[in-house]
Image (tube, rainbow, N blue to C red):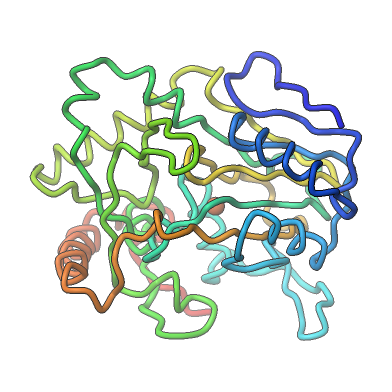
Length: 322
Ligand SMILES: [Fe+2]
């Protein structure tokens, strides 16, 4: 197995000379250590299918989901890929929302450990996945900013980010595909995240973060934007992966941010997604806990403001009809 750092970048490595379908415990140990050190790993030419993607993911821990379609293509009950989703569907709104920097599942009670994508069908142009090193971003802050944010937290909600980024107002779902996504809750998480395995601090920000308690709305927005800008302000801290079918990439959601990149949405794009659940250290609180009430109130107040503010954004403060 060969692990090669990515040139000119402070994070990431390419792993070759290994078959992810046929790993010894020792090989997985090497991969896991490299994953913690580098923040993300690219494995070219693996051609994992849905089951193999889930099986490799499970080596990192229990899954949030495994072998799921991350795609603009409709899939029938037999798993056959069909037509392309219309731009106005909730599926495409959700996909396009993910073109802004984020960490997966910070809008759930337990935030994700890591996420993996495997490319099957990719467009000729665009449609890459970009990553940003939130550890190097934190390290680049001046001491006054580090001191200021040390004990601050922000709420996380994907109803907030959909509204704020693209003017999309998904209805609250109690079940189904969006039941764990658009649920009316907002979860409080520290801005400075101490990585549970490496002990390295990083900035836990991104599109879902809003409403820092103790700050005004404008101060909170300004600070979250500033911290995000610092992370991506140096190109050694970002890496754009342009997919080749067969590639698998896995990143640490506890230290690395990511975003999807745009493409011609009329062209097919199909990636297999597997997301590994966070452990106890990633729990904010449960919706039944008393703390959850403040999150719900912060979110509904924020959405009321965005109903007006987001009218000029991509989806014009509307709700998808399909
Ligand atoms: Fe994501």
